Length: 552
Image (cartoon, rainbow, N blue to C red; front, top):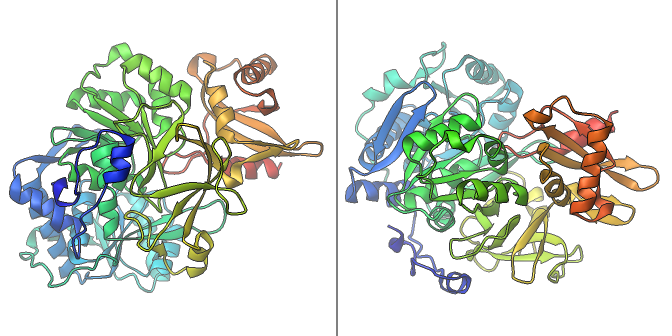
């Protein structure tokens, strides 16, 4: 498959990859037709999607099944008046209908807007009106149905509501009753151009309402490197990525790149995450490749690994936030597998990563992905030297790299703020070592300035994570009359340390940080909590901690 889209398909070194990664770009590229339907023609009986849930159900989809059922779904959508350019919100959790809907919307040239099931009516109304949403396909669960139904009266563009569950309120179409009656699908004469909008995500910043990240049809092609090279997948791989389908990480790890490789996408549709559940599924279904945010690995390493047979695992990756070296070391000690870290944003595919031909450095994001021109810039726009902290940027030449977003939809001012003079500004700070590896520091807004020092949250969090009491932690700055700001640690303790919160443990953790990193970085304030505030994607919301502290 990948030889259709790459001039060279195998790489052995960083230089080989960077010098010889060249894409073959079809006209009017459409992932559903040019990848999935081709697999269905060439290897119709090969397993493509293995879906399970925590009620014991298991459904297997071959590439032929996905073609036939996505065709039917496309026809069903057309019968409801959905067509090229229409905005369709998908609130589908981890239900298999998400994959059928995504492929079907691609096939008719409509725009998919995946969203989390945690949205309120207010959230949905905002999204409907900002994007001009025409239809919503959602799980048939009471809370979601109520929020979707409640959004209708304040959403002038919203015409069609579809429930995929047993609960189908008045005013909703019944997917499973109507879907079977859809007529045979006929491919539209002209589905898309490469620069048409294919996919859109609402992504929250540190302030203001969520912004709309629009991706064109070549975005899917940009993820070829994600699945084939970073995840190191082959046709015999069974890959599990932990991600809700409302989060951009779902298309990083559960769709495009994995099916370029011809791998099996494994889905575990569960209501509540526990490390034990995930590890049981890895054992039961012989998962070979696993990707999850560092949060998941942090909880996994606190389990008793002797209870599980994880011998099927061959390769593990992580992204979503920076990986603490202590977690890397412990996971390697328990499994013999080195975690391969990657970095990117909702606006991009993987921009930095640790590829199979690289030796990982614990805590490093790796090196620039060859499809992007990455640099670190000072505030004055000049390039940083090795060892110097700067903003990660993407330099954009005459042609936009595959995977970089198209625009912030309907917000040219915001697009111009972050993408101007041939440079896309990520807003993330890192430094580069002498070997070319990048090390995450934090968001520009998260960097703490104390007594003249610039302190990145991640470096203090990494030091704290090496103490056995700490499961998770978040470092923030608290205003201080003398130092400007002081470092605060918000800490989640391991189960064996519960009840030991107090001055003695505070002092112990402070001394530990002083020993692990430069003493000026130690947290002068430590607060113990049961859990940290997080986004749906599992990223720690330091902004929420700061806001809470500022209101005290």
